[in-house]
Length: 89
Image 1: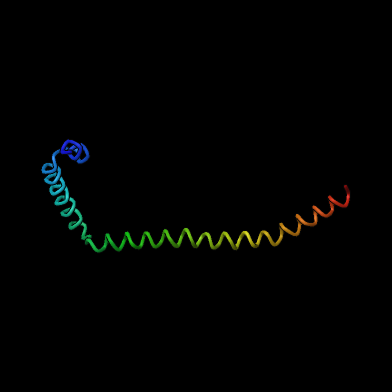
Image 2: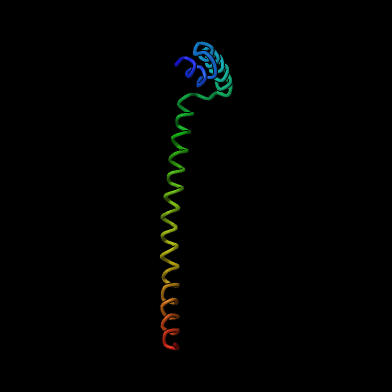
C-alpha cells in the first residue's frame, strides 16, 4: 500500500509535502509581487465559468433562432418542389 502511495505521489509523502510547501511559497511570493490576491483568482475562475456557460448556451439560443429563420424559407421551398416533382411523375 505504501509503495502505491509513493508511486502515485512521485516520492515519499513527506518529501512531496516539503516540495509542495516550497513551491507554494515561491508562487505566493511571485503572485504577491504582481499584487494578485487569492480571492481575485477565485473570482477570475468563477467569472470564466460564467462566461463559458453564457457563451455556450447563449449561442445555442441563437442557433435555434437561425434554424427557425432558415426553416421559414427552406421548408416551403421543399414542399413546393416535392409537390411539383410528384405532379410530373
